[in-house]
Image (cartoon, rainbow, N blue to C red; front, side, top):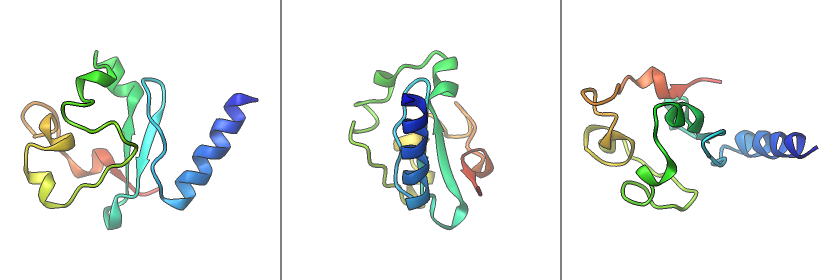
Length: 99
């Protein structure tokens, strides 16, 4: 029953275009503007040996909010601290998806 409730809440938030929560076994969705929604997959990051505190709060605040500009995509901030094309991929299509 709990999984059904979580799925319903996640779907409702997804439909509204707001952020859903992420943990090492869940995903986080962002609006992504015109390029398509952005997904942060906590499971994928955990499978690479990362834990939440690796990025929170040194790179990201712990609030459930992400606000990035197009300019941020070319700086060593937020996701691009690691996803810089050298350390980790930075291909648009791997994060931005049209659902």
